[in-house]
Length: 170
Image (tube, rainbow, N blue to C red; front, side):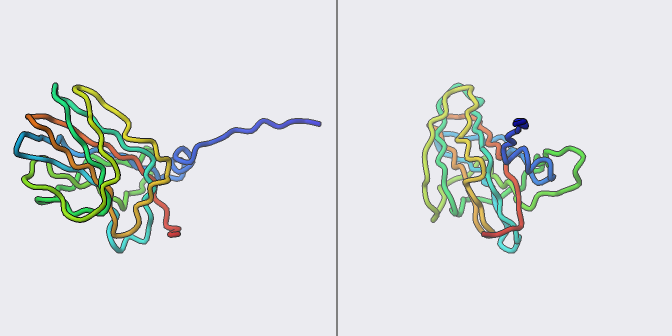
């Protein structure tokens, strides 16, 4: 009996071949003892797609500890800025993401509503994978996932998201 070789392809790689895998980053988030910052991946209410998060990463560019709260469906303080730093990962693809990375680099106050999922302490001058979720975190139309950043001193951080989009809404 001939055994044929098989190849396992992880789903994000498969989605990339279809031009449905996107990645992007917030601007630099600047905190202090009195100011916070945030970045979120948002799926617009009438998008007719689901966003399946592959992973997210947190970077701390400062020499001090930064606290990152992972919150879903919260309303952040301040005015949202749309990140221009988002791209499809199949480089010749013409697909544009539906999902948006919104952020505010320097705000007073805290978020309202939502649900706290977890908190990370991000060490000085480090980048860490938040957690690899491989599509298990699903951001449905009208929902969001956010990192709310704070520090007891001046610090700079940045958040990166990778996700794929599919119009099959489950």
